[in-house]
Image (cartoon, rainbow, N blue to C red; front, side, top):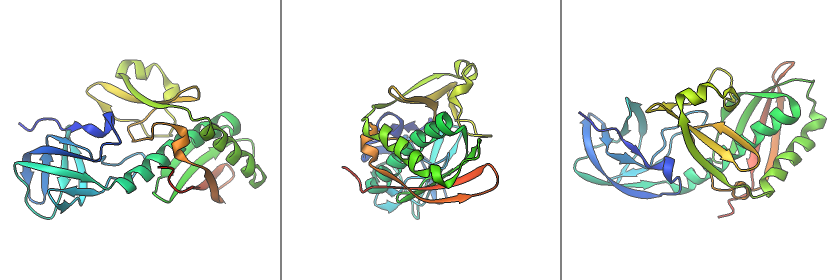
Length: 236
């Protein structure tokens, strides 16, 4: 039986390389004992990189086993190399999404309805009450950047599925629930600002996100609004 793949990125999203054992193979796919590659989800694209010198083409999870798609054959012990620039950009974007989400909820009665994170630009959709208008964009942007500038620590932990069910405030997206792994749900906290369930990768502090700008804003109906956010160049 294939052992469950250890998800190293959940404990250390800054880990850029590791070695792993090939524990099972299918044509064009290999299951590994552990991985640094996040498979995507919740609007976050899957990671990029190489395994044993071969380009990573795709990722899928099956019963806790992470399968890695490659154009070739892998066996034995292999080295994994992460496309760090791509990952770090997504970590910044995902942490930004948490800040934007909470500001929208607390100040504009917003509920997030869709997300597409990207290394250069991210799209975040909200159902906003109270007749949100274009004139409010500068305030929205300023509130987000104020939180970023606080340099709040970003940490993760896990709680039982039972506890999670008793805390509906941890769910921030409509019709999308976070993954449950071994009966536990991962929680991401921005110290002194927000706590929510999430299985993505994030930077260690809000300052690392960098300055954020609303690059484009579209009305998608009476209450549905679409925001395109862009971050300043990486501070690392």
